[in-house]
Image (cartoon, rainbow, N blue to C red; front, top):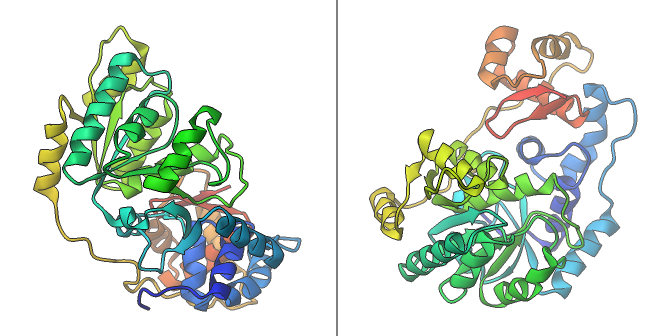
Amino acid sequence: MTLRALSDTERRDWIRLTMSENVGPQTFRALLRRYGTACDALAAIPELSRKGGLKRTPRLYAQDAADRDLASATAIGARFVGFSEPDYPELLRQTDGAPPLLCVKGDVALLNRSAVGIVGARNASAAGRKFARQLAIDIGFMGHAIVSGLARGIDTAAHEASLDTGTIAVLAGGLDVFYPPENEGLQQAIGERGLLVTEMMPGTVPRAEHFPRRNRVISGLSRAVVIVEAAMRSGSLITARYANEQGREVFAVPGSPLDPRCEGCNRLIRDGATLLLSSSDVLDRLNETWRPIQSALFEPDTPLIEPDADDASGRDRILELLSPTPVDMDDLIRESGLPSGAVAAFLLELALAGRVVRHPNGAVSLT
């Protein structure tokens, strides 16, 4: 399979599939590999879910709901980009758990520009905001886009300073929902002069569980992530964790040990993040690590072997080996003694039945 644009019908089916019950990013890809199209995958889900142990009919996203999502996006000047399309950001495409679809508004060319994430405390100090602005100006001047989450504090400072050079705001809700409310003007400006990105459908109001998902997209779009002020329970530390898992370099700005807003950054440095004192620390590192980005999305993957419909022993063996602690696919294959394709097929059925959780690193666990 090669990169290609989706038809209108395919785009609607992709929305339906990604919004259907128990279909996360890994399961979406597994279904697409197995059935070729989202339409065929949707038709197969009820039987797969039954095999996995679901006792009721799975909830599939309605066609008219997907049509409304498409119409709502068009009404605000946005559109959906699938991960099989050329406009989808290449760096994000290569990460585990990349969203199958992004809803975007603005300068889509920014998606494949070299980018640096700058995130930090919502209740940032004046000094922290000033430093974030200077970083964004310096890094933007050298041709890199700035990625952040449109939150109060450090995120706002980074976006404002990079409006003229290229800024990408990743939202935790729909593009037509202004959050936080005081950033409505900034969000509109970014939609006109930069780029707004979300994996949520139009009209979605941000909830607590949406922000970690947003954070993995921030780091996934970025070649490096800078943390400027972060308390120990800050969401910015979640972004740093995702960045590490995705192979991005994490920079942290040191601060006073007496300021709780700096405790998270100081801990990151202690645990191996690169100490950042000026924009040159990031820029020099970006120059050292630059290489052309090539797509790995459609490299051959483990073929799915259709299990015997009457053979429940394989599923039982997989369930026996699983626990709430995530386990790698290779360990499951080795311990079960089953072919890798059969294990992948059983896991797909169990995931659609809501009995297992797929993690971004390829591991799985019981729900």
